[in-house]
Length: 163
Image (cartoon, rainbow, N blue to C red):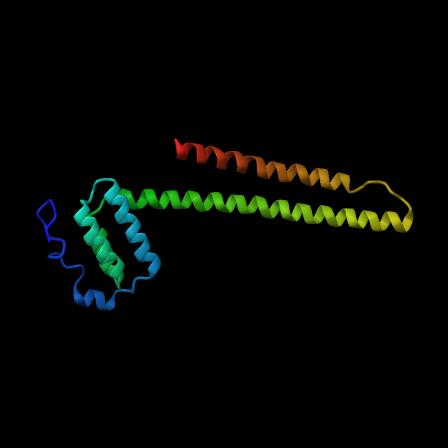
């Protein structure tokens, strides 16, 4: 099967047999990543439909990393770096949101604990001064100082990506 450029993909060896024997085996995640990169290359016009279909078939059946590397070797490196950059940004955003959720959860739990202690002390001593308000307010400012910038940055990034 030939491509539009006249070169046959199957005529190019995926990797020498000796290299395949010593190459690490490819896992499902690596095959999925290769398929994503091939789809990006097809979408960007670097591959024809026939080339994409042929490489996709080879990528899904690949057993070694060398086979996957051979499929992607002639594609521009910018495809890989742009996908890596986007994935890194997404991981950072998820981690930031998780950090806010953890912070808010610990804040809520500790605030509840302080109120329970206040109720127990108030009941035992008859002194009902609302002391938990001060640590709850002070810590609340810290939680807001954490949550607001993360939320604003996440929303701004989502707006940029949709436009």
